[in-house]
Length: 226
Figure 1 (cartoon, rainbow, N blue to C red):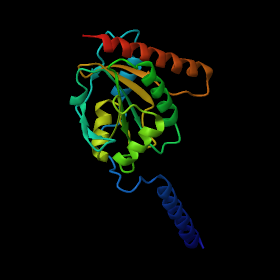
Figure 2: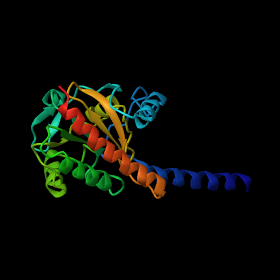
Figure 3: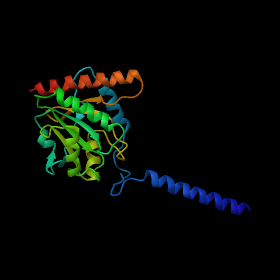
Figure 4: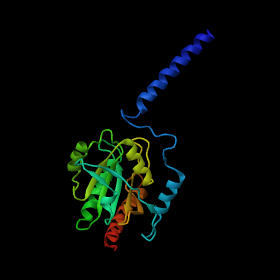
């Protein structure tokens, strides 16, 4: 009887494990990070905390990575195309139903506030398997992104992970990505990290709005730097 009980318990545990894997497994074609892949390290967290406490743009936080990816028009676009122009960065995926719509709305507001400046916007997908150039083109039209100033980029899963890690905003699955914005100057230096999402607490909502107001002002300052 004891042996039969153990067998039943083992079978139940096995079915449970399969069910959990079915729910959490990555999408087809996804490249699982190796043990050496960058993660949300204490160093990255420390950099973000310092940035949130910034009172001005005096300090360079770190160098933005070099990247060469594919835009919504199917053309190669990379960091070399942004030299001499400040740019804002966000990470997203087109089918996101969580924080991405709110982030995109705030970035759209920023696009309007920065009209007439040379500030660019770069959105990196964290779901490159599904976010093909064609799909990004449709998403660009849906969100009202100015194709001349707002660049939606994709690549291989490994390329996107490496790019995110280079910005110190790594992720391990589409639904697990940063909700922060970055601001990079004309020389390719990260100058600020900004809270872009709201939560239920009023204090945090106010802080998010203040962070976006500061980002808009900072972007205009960077656009005027020589």
